[in-house]
Length: 196
Image 1 (cartoon, rainbow, N blue to C red):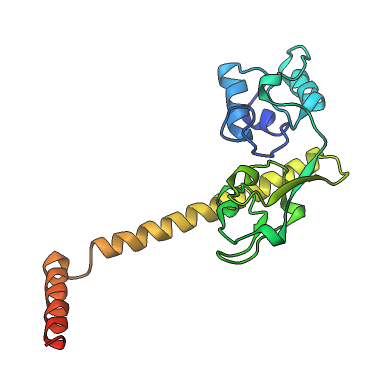
Image 2: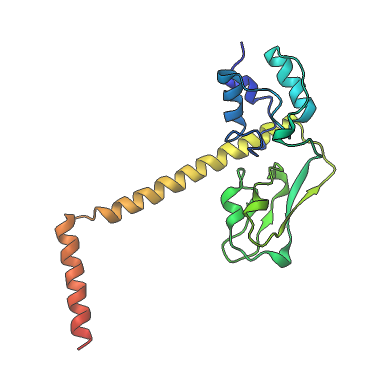
């Protein structure tokens, strides 16, 4: 039986979105539930299409050029001289493969990089290059990348929940709205008296 999990296991887990879906699992879902074509994954290339064809019982077809072309595996590299530390690349990396902090130099953790290239258009300084490193992307790499992606998603969800809880606490201070207004009025009065 063809399942979303079984198809997802055959995809390269680059999370590049070249297929028109929001990541590899979404593409697997479209293949299983909507009958999407199996030839929309450029990173998987001919080998990936052959795996999907075998799993789905569909014929092997060439990669649809509308979704990219098959190229050698490449990783992102940040040119240090051009990085301004804006952290825009951090926000789009699906596997947390970019290290750095705002206003400081960023770098790629090559072992975590899936070659998705989502960081390239995100960089306002055009400081990121995709460099062929001579390695082939295997299913073992894909499964490891999926683990990185899931961990990154959990971290993002946790950060979002913490931020929402913080904002909610600010919206509903202890003591209710009347004590909030009273506190604001007291601060305003103190500031007014200090300025006299």
